[in-house]
Image (cartoon, rainbow, N blue to C red; front, side):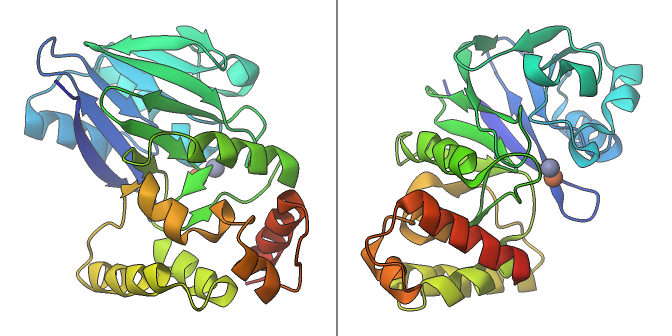
Length: 255
Ligand code: ZN
Ligand code: FE
């Protein structure tokens, strides 16, 4: 049976996620921007936290860990490469490692770019991937530490997962990402209709995450640097997709 997923808005525009295995009762949270909303979601569902999975060291993904551990005894898991700047880890993981939440297994992916040491957690059986600030709904994280080539490779890794994978990303940036994406890929019908749906959802105050990998492949310009229509639109016909990606990312930084 697939893990149950709960999306939790935190701070002004962050998301944490709970995943719960109904058979064993094990429950993990992915990222902890703040403890309060996560504690409320656990209480609402009657779940007991057993694992804390951390994607990267930025404060808006880890700041609530100490408060959460004050009321729950959970195993903290994060990247070995970032152990020095994450809260104390019970388990430090690297790309290719696996970890078990209930009856499901997560594969750790190195998705460096936003930071060096950013990881994603992929649960193939439940068809979930937790991408935080690597692949985001219609966007990708800003390159604070990594190079365009690193982020491009990280996104390619995520793009190669099954298309029916649910993409659980870390922020509600989708509206502005959509406005930007339309400047890169203005004739993309799938993007135009997704942008409309995003506007409707945000007008109602609804989250635009999670999304599906199929949607991202069809509409997210950061996954489409190889697309001839986008390359022509940017005046980069036949360019190396890494260079096209770098150009799109630089335009987004100025947007
Ligand atoms: Zn971040
Ligand atoms: Fe963030």
